[in-house]
Structures are given as structure tokens and as C-alpha cells.
Length: 357
Image 1 (tube, one colour):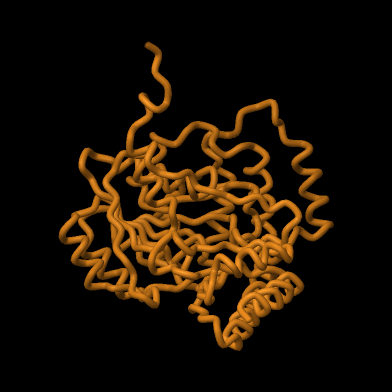
Image 2 (cartoon, helix red, strand yellow; image 1 turned 90 degrees about the vertical axis):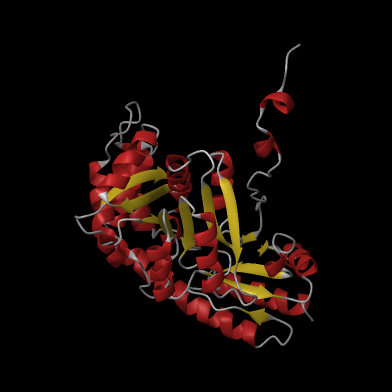
């Protein structure tokens, strides 16, 4: 008798849910931490001419030397460290997890944090251990260190700043975690551009068990799907063995190389986003029924009296945000609000004020 997925797919895979992305057609999209600004028309036109000349009939350069050099310059990556490229940073997360997936090995992550850490662990057949944050989303360092001592994880994920909470954990606490961890500590700096310069990049030469993950998505290039892992040559050499050949397509590589040569455009957009984040935070603080949490990212997490009702009320007014109610006990009645354009933020705040009374 022939067997289908119910009989052949691993039980642990069948038990999990796929990463869900809701449709956003016709809505003000404030749910996915995207840069809300398009390219300036002149820059877009110049990029169009460049991409028209790309040989799409040929496979990409498997080494992507030019793009790696551009990323090194744009992100001040020292020559002592190497770069491995991914189809978005999600692929880097999966590469790192698969590389460390020994039988019985554990992946440890703080919770709530980025859902892909747990999904990647499941895909690799690794044991996943979540360590809860405090009720205000601050780090319970003692609990984390105890979990590291007990579980001896092969891989520990720390998002810096954290997603979906938006906050930065204390740098010295992270260094103590790195010192205590028997395995690799992977620092996910997807939102580094909005964090006021917070980064562990300058610590990596002193700590051989640290690996850094970044992306160009939050800078304004989410559609290109270009992520990178930064680490000592020994780490990147092993990850290159698992990376699928030609994982970054020729158009994405050419566009990223070109656009990162115009960082002043994206730096200006980042400054605008930071100014709007401050305005958003001030407006949320003025709503008596809303609790706003500190953010070092391009979004703000807020707790409202009834998140499902507020989510639907915003959606009815054409605004899509992210509700985390029901995903984790610490995120009860929490909405994550991406910082949009001034007009988008005003529309969202007006709708939210009405939704929460």
C-alpha cells in the first residue's frame, strides 16, 4: 500500500505550524518591520539600467566576492572575520542550526523571541529549549545561565535587539553568557541599524564561540533577500559546505552591491524611522490604556486591553499590524507596530486610540 505525508513525514515536523504571513493586499502594512520608504526615483532608474544588463542566462558567481566586499565595507566587518551569504538571514539561521545538529544536541533561545530559531531546530531534528524572559521582557540572567549549565546547548540564540519585544539586553550579561556557553552563541543583529550602535561585532575576535547574523532587509532591501553570517574563518568554512550553490540570485546580488554603495540614502531613511519611532512611543505613552515597551528596533511592542479586538478594528480601517496574543503567555494582548511613514503612523495611532477607547 502506498503511503503519503501522514505516514512518511517526521512526526515532529507534522506537529508544528508553518511560519504564517497574512495577506496584506490593499492595507497599510505595519506588520513585518519593513522600511516603509521606496527608492528615490533617480536611484531606482539607475538600478534598473544596471539590472537590465545582468546576464540572467548565467548562474550567479558562487563566491559573490564583490557583494561580500561591499557588505564588509558597509557594515565595517574587519578582515579577521569572514562572511557567508544567505537567501535572507533565515537561511543563515538554518545553516548554523544544521551544522550543529548532533544527535541529542540542544538549541537554546530566549522566549519570546524570533520564531524561526525554534522552526530551524525542528527542521534539523534538534531539541529546543526556551528560556522565558521576565514579565517586562528584561533578561533573567540567572535563569539563562542555569539553563546553559543544565542543558549544555550546542547553539544559543540571542536577538540583539530582540524581536518581537524590541529591547536590548545588557551587553555585559551577554558576554557572561558567551563565557559560560559550551557551544556556539549566535547573535542575531537584524535590527542593528536602529539600535544606536549596539553590536557584538567588536567582541568577536576575543570570543571564538560567537557568530553574528545580519541582513539588509531592515535597511530597506527586504525584497532582495540577502542575509549574511559573520564569523571566524573556521565557522564560515564549515557553513559553506552546507550552503546551497547559487543561493543568492544574480539580480539580488547586483542590486544589493549597487544600492549599498549609496548608504547615505538608507541612512537618511533610518534617521526618519527613528524620529517616527520617538513620535510613536510618545503617542502610545499618552494612551492611558496602552503599555508601551522600550524599543531599539524599527517597531514598538504595546499591550492593549483587548489585542484581538484592536487588531480587527485596525484591519477594518485598512491597517495591518501584528498581534501576538495567544502565541506566548508573556505576549498576552500585545500588538507589534512597525514604524511606517508619518502618514501611516498617524492613521494607525488614530485608529488605535479609537480601538482602545
